[in-house]
Image (tube, rainbow, N blue to C red; front, side, top):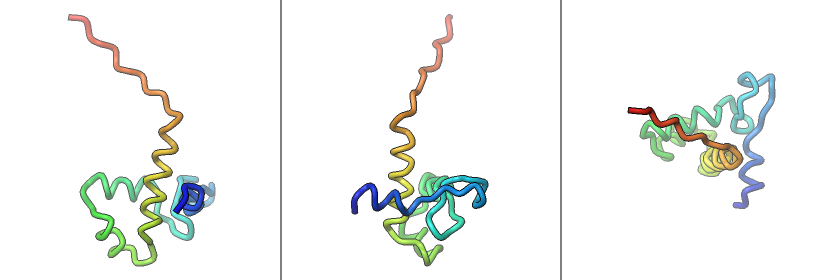
Length: 82
């Protein structure tokens, strides 16, 4: 599936979840899904818990986060002087 098709699964609406990016047709935020993955949930476990989600929805969350970070500039922490 192409990036554009995956990203169409993510929507932002100020009236839904305070404007956070969500999976289209749900109230599940990208942040929530990524947090589940970060804390050890498998894609299979997430899909089992949320029957209406698809593998592509999970992929879309990861791709969305990747795209959001592409233009982010990270500043190194200042080194402490001894």
